[in-house]
Length: 42
Length: 183
Image (cartoon, rainbow over all chains, first blue to last red; front, side):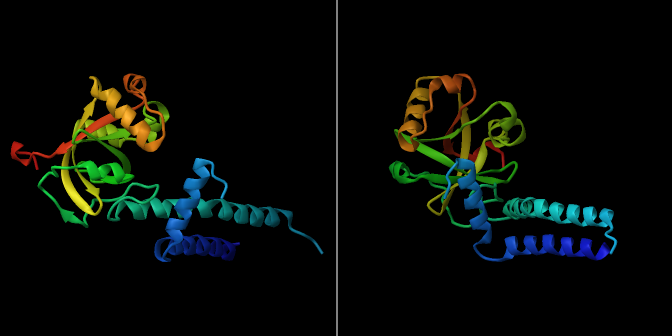
């Protein structure tokens, strides 16, 4: 079970690093979120 | 073969919990990173406006603002920035804050109250930064003109009644006078 917690933590850490350091990901997420909040499908 | 149902449930809970946490963690990372960036992002407020030429001479002609969709505003206190709408009327600039009152104002939109308390700030338009002073306007004939200007420009209806009900706040943007002893 400990091993599973480590994997989960690693996944979350990877998400943070991708969002912070991979160009375009942050903007993509924000634009999708904005569209969702505005009620635009695509 | 004996299946440990408790372990299966725990693994399942861990997987579901991780999946739920992924968007939460991603948005949290975005919000935190925005706080230290030069200007706001699309959704989250940003840090102090640092790049761009600092223009201390107030423009004599702001008519170009009619073609500007958004600008960036940073208050001096707290030094955070956000993207806002702007209109120009007879050489004067105005900004708005919709959805005031209720839970949104209490938990999300704190900058209007902060601006009302201390209107000093910096705005960035088309890459240039201007030291400014915000003054909230709540009455007078200008209210109707500003509401109409926003309605025309952004096609979102704004009315003097909303200003009266304090669900719409309007601010005039003026040059900041640094001779008053404040920094």
